[in-house]
Figure 1 (spheres, rainbow, N blue to C red):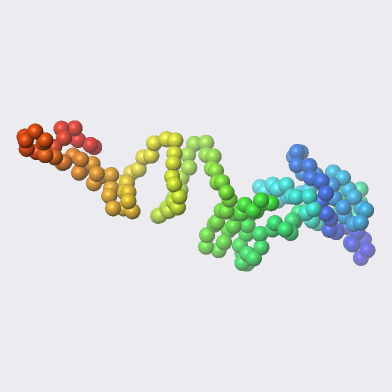
Figure 2 (cartoon, one colour):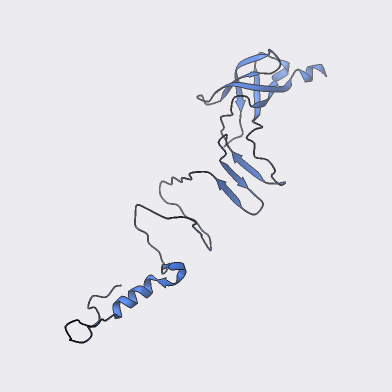
Length: 183
């Protein structure tokens, strides 16, 4: 049983090197039991740089304290908690969160940027934007565009322009409709 106790333990991460293909850490497994350049294994497809002071599980393979590995770094002060069973979250030290709830996904961040090399598509029956919208290119829509809460459409404005007349100031009656129509 003592051999098993010597194989697995807790450790505090003191220094993290995130430059190499496999992240390495300096950790303290027990009081005074410091290990340098310990590999910190992370799940495939996920990469994190845990803050100094994070805790990890340390494994001494075959009880050999000369070559430990660290698993599952945890920083208790920033971990996203109070999730319901089956829910998950990705978070960082600065409070940015991606939370996968049972019925929705919520992204909380001061700035959200998507970089797509060829295109980006959002498929939803309704999209609500709660803020100002700006862009650097033109906008093309397959359907009519409405403004003022749906009160007026671009099609309605074109039809109004195409049939409008106004009274001439020189007493000549009303003008003809514009000879150049808006399409």
